[in-house]
Image (tube, rainbow, N blue to C red; front, side, top):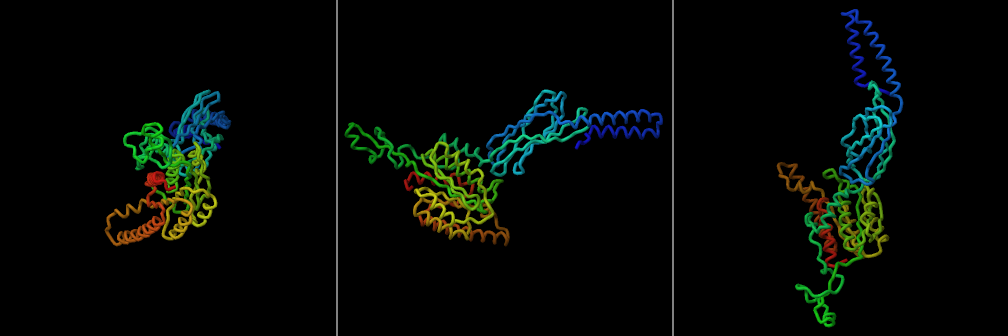
Amino acid sequence: MIYPTTLHIALWVLLSMIGLLDFFLPGIAPVWQISVAVLVGVSLLDGLLSLRRPPLKLQRTVHHSLPVTAWSKVKLKIANEARYPLSLRIHDHCHPDFRVQDQPNSFSLAKGHSATVVYQVFPSKRGHYTFPGADILVHSPLRLWQKKWYFPCANETKVFPNFREISHYVLLATHHHLSMMGIRKLTKRGEGKEFHQLREYRKGDELQKIDWKATSRYRRLISKEYQDERDQQIVFVLDCGRRMRHMENGKSQLDQTLNSILLLAYVAVRQGDGVGLYSFGGTEKWLPPRKQEDSVRSLMLGMYDIESSTNASDYLRATQDLLKLQNRRSLMVIITNSRAEDHEDLLIMTRQLRRKHLVVIANLRENILDETLSAPINGFTEAARYQALQDYLTKRQKLHRQLQHLGIYALDVTAQQLPAAIVNTYLEIKNTGKL
């Protein structure tokens, strides 16, 4: 299907106006008739030329992995292999889950030349996506007609948790600046619980760290140097139920939780521990703990397509699965968003897991709760809402006291507070040697 251009319509409007002048200037009719005949002939010829598929070559450049809820660039290179210049308007096909900026693009392309257009995409969900091709609107040689052509150009990409945020955290960790995001200073070398090596005594060393046998043998003070225990295992237990779908600032609690998991995984691998993941309530996955250089990347590849569901999470079935899947004692980091009806099941889950594992529970809460608590009360509706919120928080506090009484590390945090909270808890556990 071809369509007339604005120029084509304007020419016919002009000839129509000239035809109307024939009522006032009778001698203009022959000129008008010739003009109409010429335009019809030229229009037909130009229309026939526009039916030929233009010899365009399309190439897309897009990263194989994109971060969710972040802008990323996509490049399209268009080469004109025709013997005449072309006027183009291009629109690349993207998935509906992508927001798009800087599309469509219009430009002219001389014969034998190529051009590159750049636009940006903003994936709102994680997963596997395909860019199938692009629509290109091409003007006919005389620009009287235009026709849209579809050019297939398939590229695949995976949308991961926002690893750009993780890269920022990693950069802070590399330069020992994790305190900038609320993470307390890492344990200094030699202050852990696991023996590392012997070295000469340094001023300030504790007396109990002096190895007296080595001191008598070398006839100088020798101290024992310790490090944090290594070769331990961490299993992230991720709730993907309906409550983790809650959106804050354009991000779901699940997406923010995945970022926190990757951060703690990076810190744990640097400490010499293995990391794994078990998800339930939505996408169900089991990634056994691994201790390798690429453990964080493997974890990210394994959980990029985890999605939440509209179902209630089954804590008891998840408990039975975990006890079968993970035999070795490990640190179980449970991340969930519970309500009063879940508390009994959550207590049963922790009681069973703590018999064999060390358990940390991060129970997420919504930012709106803190905002409501600090908002002024100006009427009955606000007072009733405040009282209901106090009742809800009282039940949460009761749950957390019960968990702490069982020896569970219980965290009551928002999704924004989660990264620092779970890393600090992990470092505290490492320092005390409880695992």
